[in-house]
Amino acid sequence: MNKTPSLATTESARENKPVHEQVYSALCESILAGEFVPGVSVTLRGIAEKLGVSPMPVREAIRRLVAEGALDVLENRRVCVAPMTLIRSKELYHARLSLEPQLALSAMDNLSKKDIQGLRRIDDELNQSLFSGDVDTYIRCNRRFHFGIYERANSPVLCPLVRSLWLQFAPLTRIVFGRIGTELIQDFHADALKALNDGDRGNFRRAIESDIREGMDALSEHLQREN
Image (cartoon, rainbow, N blue to C red; front, top):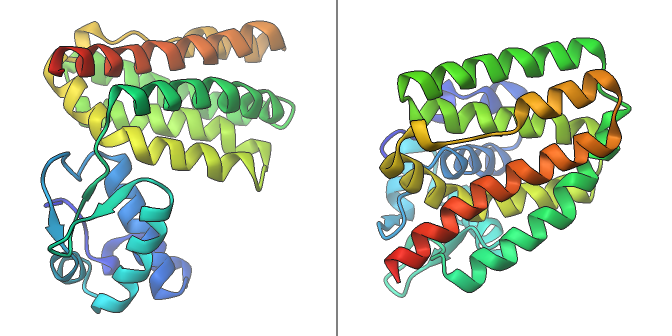
């Protein structure tokens, strides 16, 4: 968790949210960025010191993330990302395929030309990161691309569920893509963007499904090798 910024420097701190919400948002960002390393535990006090807050809002945020399946509290009161197993990865795979394409379709009618242009800029940056081998930027842009679509669905139920799924597999993604390198990563963002421009709901859904399968297959292959 070395990269976790002080709340004074985060965007969430400038939104006048309650401190416990700021802490929760900051921890979510750290987990999604792969800054919590599987197998490495940290203390609540250490998190609080890095964020520049008292332990109380950290405990509250940790409780939420444990309930969402993103973190585990160990017997020594240290915190780590929840371990990934083959069974768990398969359930996440099926859950993502069930929820995310539907959420994307719900967002489709709300995506303006300006939104699509923004998604294209994100994908251009992502493609550059693949070319340069910048895994951190790839992970950040991939998340921005997907949630740039999902959040336009304005769904108070599906979007939080999908975010909780991402919180569970994101730490392993950082390790897997860090090992295999960016040259082996394939995405279907260009297909999704073309379908958006064409208003083709069937191809848009298929592009999102293919993108999910590509990423989750890489995680499954890693877990099978490890086991």
